[in-house]
Length: 255
Ligand code: PGA
Image (cartoon, rainbow, N blue to C red; front, side, top):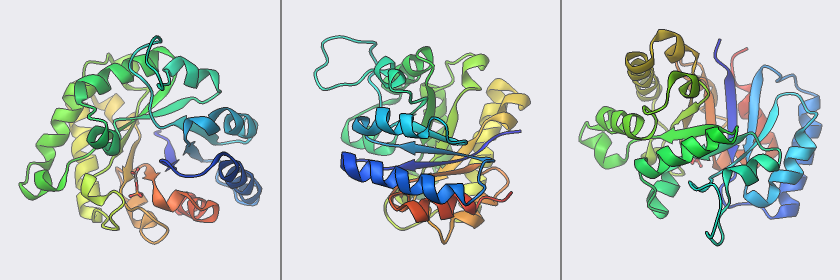
């Protein structure tokens, strides 16, 4: 059985104290809700990782993630953070391949493949993002765009590593825009991703891997998206910044 997962991606939001307050609030709120069957991952800026990993350590079903890692193990890369450093904070997950990093930091599939390798080598689970942009969608090239991202960034992995990944389908045109993929578009793409994984790694792996939807997912549309058969939860940006909204999205997953 694949896992239901809701990742909150804070992006570059929240000071240190704001982050700690947020986590204290969701710890309090979640004690009164039973969401143990949903894995809840908070992807914070680096500065919060150790403190929040520590706070969440004994809370069932909560984990913390970094939003990026460097592709080299260590060395003279001023300002960068390695996978080993992230792992040493107690974080177990890292987002890799987010479209904002592809766009603003020029990260391509080749570099992202190296980041996936180094994350896995340091016992971090990559939450790997794939998604087409609007030009590709309008040109009916969206399936091809996703196929290339999967092939170039992930399909070098042996089965024993590929199975460790969490995937997130995030159409770039839906991120932060208020435009969400329709159920038809989301389910169609998740099914396509699973079929490509099936071709490469077989049925057991393609049915076991969790594929999350991301892009303007909020308290109003989460339930219908999460009810799609091939959607295993969400990667939530803007709507994960308020504790009660994040938990409401978690609670909209079908039990
Ligand atoms: P959004 O961001 O929910 O604000 O659209 C999603 C993401 O970028 O992961």
